[in-house]
Amino acid sequence: MATIAISVVCFIVGGGLAYWFFRYGLKNKYNSIIKEAETEAEVIKKNKLLEVKEKFLNKKADLEKEVAVRNQKIQQAENKLKQRELMLNQKQEEVQRKRNEAEAIKENLEAQIVIIDKKKEELDKLHSQEREKLEALSGLSAEEAKERLVESLKEEAKTQAASYINDIMEEAKLTANKEAKRIVIQSIQRVATETAIENSVTVFHIDSDEIKGRIIGREGRNIRALEAATGVEIVVDDTPEAIVLSAFDPVRREIARLALHQLVTDGRIHPARIEEVVAKVKKQVEEEVIETGKRTTIDLGIHGLHPELIRIIGKMKYRSSYGQNLLQHARETANLCAVMASELGLNPKKAKRAGLLHDIGKVPDEEPELPHALYGMKLAEKYKEKADICNAIGAHHEEVEMTSLLAPIVQICDAISGARPGARREIVEAYIKRLNDLEQLAMSYPGVTKTYAIQAGRELRVIVGADKIDDKQTESLSTEIAKKIQDEMTYPGQVKITVIRETRAVSFAK
Image (cartoon, rainbow, N blue to C red; front, side, top):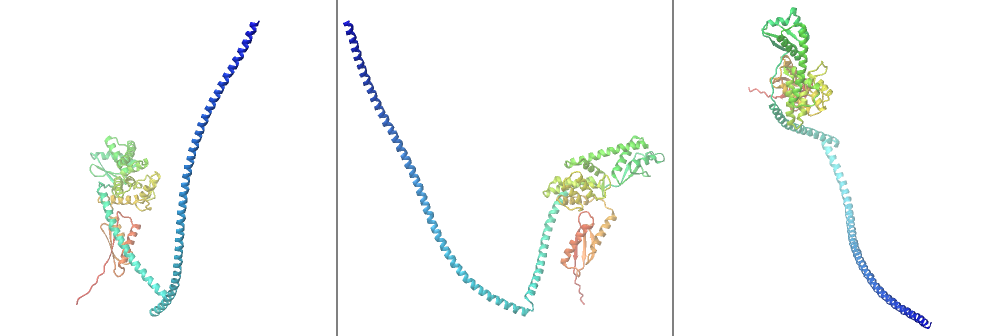
């Protein structure tokens, strides 16, 4: 028991001691840990304080720099303001100085104006005195003298203006005539033409006179059927191996010629056969007309024409004007128009188109009441041709006003094609009548003593009395005669009017 008690006591004492030793050791360890933590916290605190201090110093430096920059800008602005203030002060002083100078000049001018007014009054008095003296000497008032002076100046100005106008017109005529001649001659030289003279009859040649009887038929029934079917007069006379077909319509003559050729070749000639062949030939001719129109437009390089206009162009092959084939005349005019338009810097295709179509009014399907130029213009408008081409067609005989440059070109080229030697045949009576009309028209003017139409009606010489008309009036007389001829007469090409005034002084030595 004692041993157990001692063991228990020893255990208790040993456990207490161990506990105190353990507690003392923990306390020491705790104290050391606290000291280490405090030391580390102190270090961290110092580091943080250093970082904060460094940041503070950096911020302070940045702020000081920014403040310095702002102060510098403020200083510069203050300097600029001071400079501006200085300049404003200088300008204000200069304005004040100029204002003082202006005041001085104003005072000086007012003084001079007063002196000038006094001198003006003195001059007015002198002027009035001089005018009274002049009126007394001349016997005219100031208004009358002024009117006479104005009239004299008017007459002098009129004379100078007339002289100036004459000089300009002469210079323009020389230049224009030279240039126009060059263009016209060059256009003519570049176009190859043919001479085509047609009649209103066609001679149909046959192999023997026996065929004449077969053509006439029993009691003339074949020839009557042929004339009724074709509308052509068939003349069978004593002319050997020839039958004459007479008609003013070339298409009818061509149909009759082709029909006769087929009938004679076939050998069967009777009224029913005649009607059959004539109908067949008419269809062939119509097809040939369209083919001719197409070939013509292709040759000339003209596109987009209405089919009816192409047919009308083909019909021109069987028409003639003053003995000139109409299709040949249209082709020739078209080529001339293209050349002339190129020389003048215009559109040659449009000019060629207008030149080809300018005489389509001469081949109507029915007889119109309008002149051929106006009727052709209506046809062109109907088939949607452009306005300038329609105007060129209608104005080439000046029956409507020319509104484009194509119109005078077509008119000139039409005259060139029709007026060249061998192009047309004119009836002698009409030619003589035109010459007489020219002379009589000029004789109707007062002061005209004699007139002579020369150069086949291309020039009209007008002789006036020297005692009735002066030199200035001769110029206006030639212009008036030219305008009247242009308005009242129809003629190919142009007519030159030359007015001659001659003064003769005659004396006798005795």
